[in-house]
Image 1 (cartoon, rainbow, N blue to C red):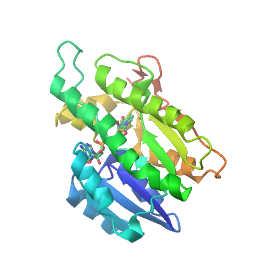
Image 2: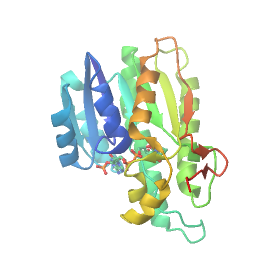
Image 3: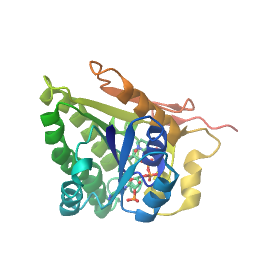
Image 4: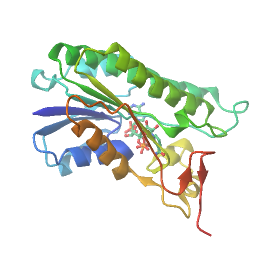
Length: 250
Ligand code: NAP
């Protein structure tokens, strides 16, 4: 039985990944997020065993307590999908809200570090494990207003590659996923509930769908044990790496 923990499973990429991986024979899922109801609704539709953990990944004590409190038969985690994350705001650096920076750094960087540091030693001891980190093209290509969000994702990309060095000689694999724009709750969160501003991000274009990223994750973890997919950068066909520009139908 393969146990896969997915953070941020209540929406978007995490939810689609749970839905896809739940179909694989011999898989069971630990699903985490803050919105318990969303996790319960999702779990009720999945054709596999699930264990739900509700915690805010910014809260170090709650994160550690959730992992340490796993029942003994759920402690052996084979795959960790570090997906929970967010962008807040798109203002220029000089007018951006530093409180937004704090939330992004605590979630995208510190939350990911806390969880990974807690789970990795057991993977190493068992000689089994795959860590999949959700970074972004924003970690490579900068665009106006993405300063701290992009920097947090550059951190994730660097960390994924650096961890490969630390884990050399073990069986543990690390994969960094770097999507371009994906149509999820991401922009609604970024623009703090302003749906029309969020809709404008995807207007007259076909962005990636959460299912596209789920399929990429499924493929990366399905590779034979001697193959490590270091990083995958993927974008909608209508988006280009410079800018990143989006082509919109007239
Ligand atoms: P989404 O639809 O907004 O989903 C984000 C998930 O993260 C939700 O399940 C949310 O759950 C969880 N989350 C956020 N803050 C949390 C916290 N403090 N504690 C626990 N869980 C938290 O966004 P998405 O597009 O699927 O994003 C998933 C990942 O992909 C993120 O790391 C994002 O940066 C990355 N990404 C997205 C895009 C894009 O265009 N959409 C592109 C590149 C990379 P709760 O709210 O229930 O806690």
